[in-house]
Length: 325
Ligand code: SAM
Ligand code: SF4
Image (tube, rainbow, N blue to C red; front, side):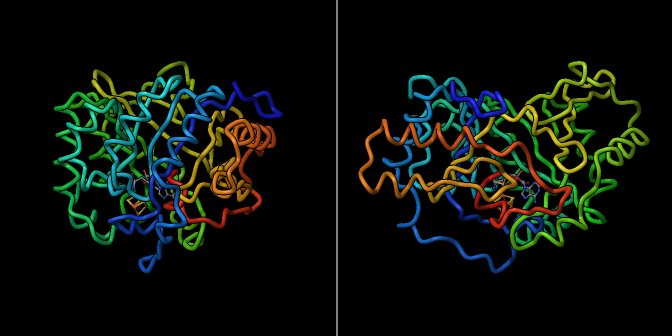
């Protein structure tokens, strides 16, 4: 297993399959976002080779993300190949759900077992406002198809001040009374071209919990407060589902970070919120053998930054959609 110099075991890879998206969420990218040409992105064979290198270094968990991962050509074939890679024990995907429905059955058959669907509100008008283009019904269709197929489901809701921070949050939390889902509320992180908006839009976890408790009753802390991934987990009394709070701004979880990220343009990114990255794509295209690629990955992981610098106003240059969260 690869370690960084702070003795953290790094074994979870988040793979951005594309920087493209079929939505333009206000907290993620500008409306006139432009995307990279295909030739600058990892091709299927390059991506799968890198996944094998990471797996040989001890990476056992992969989350596919984007941009919108369901837009990637050959998604099902890629999932099947990753699921069959020796060493990979868990394969998950984060998606906006818009084009998920027809893909659910083939993805399950290919080995995908977990899906995080991003859904910030149950109000179709607000959904459209937050995503600029989206239809809520499409997400619901994807979500229910995923549940019917047996995929384990989490919902990701980014909470934006004055847009979905009151009744919407309560409505989403109420879903856990009916479904065995984890609804995760995420603090907006400032990055890329929309950082100033994101900074003013952030709603702290403590305020969200108080809003939910006032409407639905006391929240019980789960797992003795131990994080589930990056989420602190709570539950409403007798609810089948749980509530997760991902609070990188007010309660950073950098000390327990076990992740590395691979961008669609083949960069190894050492921290979501730092610009430090290394170019694996050019290494592959220069003909480096696997041993060199793996050494390069391990050497760079050793220098993974301790944590983000949001408290000192250090913001990453890339937009969230280029990295995948
Ligand atoms: N398109 C897919 C989706 O929306 O689920 C995958 C990529 S998206 C960048 C991954 C996650 O990041 C989503 O749950 C999204 O809501 C979240 N996200 C985007 N911008 C964010 C920001 N500025 N702060 C916190 N989370 C953000
Ligand atoms: Fe697209 Fe996901 Fe970003 Fe929304 S959060 S614009 S769906 S990449």
